[in-house]
Length: 390
Ligand code: SF4
Image (cartoon, rainbow, N blue to C red; front, side, top):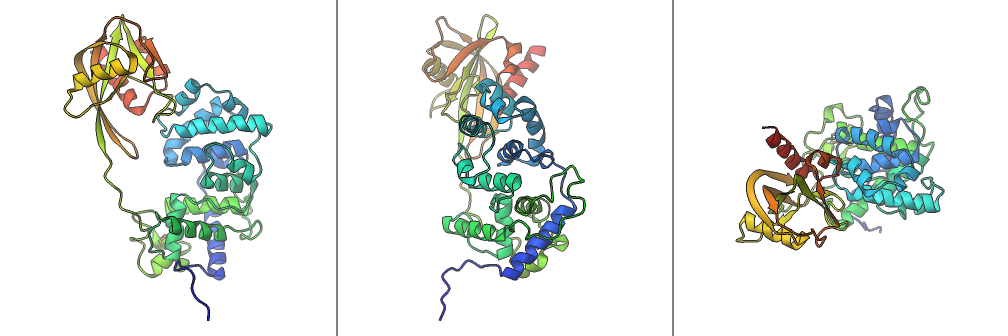
């Protein structure tokens, strides 16, 4: 007698092949025209995949164009300075992605002749390349039969499966990867290509695995949306376990998020002879490599003015006189909410020492926009400009 080894639901071979056909037909009939779909260059495809992690398509588009105008090849990226790289990335967030991209580009130049490796093992060994990025780039650029399981694909596949287990559990994730891999069609297994493949500027219809991974993500973004999936328009409704059981609104099941902590930070606009002090955050810190108005977290029971004085002493060995309040700025990161309370300060005598930062400079106010700054500091800079115009 056979025993069930897993309680994770599975799709039958007939369902898998119908899903492949129906979803690829849907996607190929009307793909969105996105810049990274107009290229077969693996480097460009890779840049887009990195930018799209945790970031909306509409946000990525202008960054993608600017980044590739500045760094059109892996060689150009490998030669980028921190300053140039972070300035182009400024505002896109998750800055470590940019640093990893450059590190990986340097390995590509050193070890792969400047070309993105057409080899999953070599590509996965590059800095910052995880399982998702590897599957996405290797399938889209090289037609390899590899899965790419992002948030959209997790939602879509768990609905097809009718999966009522928490998708944040390691075992469930492993089962989803397995399901995702079994769904990717081998090259030639997809439905007949549309006649437009090759005529359209979009590189859709060139390989089945790459089209499949894009199709599933597109489908998740446009139809099988998180809150209100558009089931009545769905091309794969008959193979959807969640729809069959009326569970679309409850799948995927996610772990309850903990409330994120909220901290207060004192930040100084520290003036000396018409210039303002900017400090470069330590490379291994959050927002590493970006420049900021110096300061730090307020301790319990400490006034914000004392916090700024203490932080300037600890970070730069600089005494300051705290003056007028400029602005409070609240910014939310994935794991943290920060309120920056920002005050004008007058620097005391003495050299600035780089104790808690990688660099420190006195900068004329009109030259500050040339520095890569965190989003919160951009808002402080805007407030400073507005205050000076008054
Ligand atoms: S039927 Fe609804 S829930 Fe199921 S795959 Fe289609 S859009 Fe998603």
